[in-house]
View 1 (cartoon, rainbow, N blue to C red):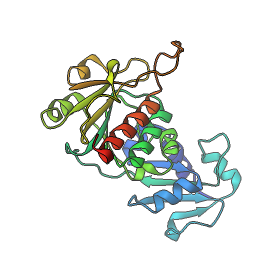
View 2 (view 1 turned 180 degrees about the vertical axis):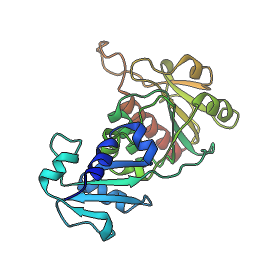
View 3 (view 1 turned 90 degrees about the vertical axis):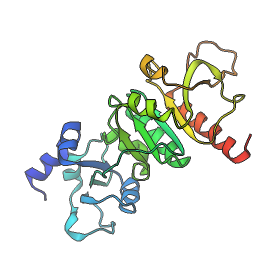
View 4 (view 1 turned 60 degrees about the horizontal axis):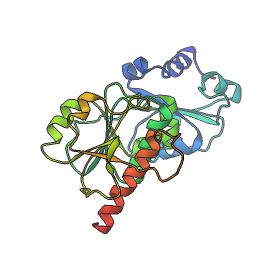
Length: 247
């Protein structure tokens, strides 16, 4: 059994202000927890109905399924929930291939983009201050453990891009851009992805070096644009392919 104060803390972490106050976030499900336990992140506490985790005993709390249901954010709770300390993240350097997000709002999209950065070896993901919180439980769930392997920065992206464009190429994703498959691409640079409904803001657009487009190959003109996470996958794949082939 756990205390009311523990329950209060766990439930409070569904809100950004309390995550930031305590510098803690939660994750549910065995697979994601195992991934984070195997990372550099520090475990705060673990609540589980199965004694299967290799962690410090004083941090493991064996609980009933009924108790897990009390603290879970999921409609159908999984078998474990863990709380981790947020990592300290320093100011990013302009290096390698980076992704910048301009006001991305959907937790599933951000979680998928974090996984894509992990898959394609992007070390730094830079988010505008208005982008959804990466420690939102839905985002953490969608990353499937990748949140422990990608450095995620929240900052004024106009200031960052203004400095970065003096050192590297800044690519933006636009419906009126040039075909990504035919344009010369640098193996290093910054890919800017915009808000789901409004795209890249006018302030950020002024800092773009090259506007790129994913061409539509189908005959239907009813599809106006691609989901931002899908677009991220295509752009990262094409930049990675160019790096390998040199073409």
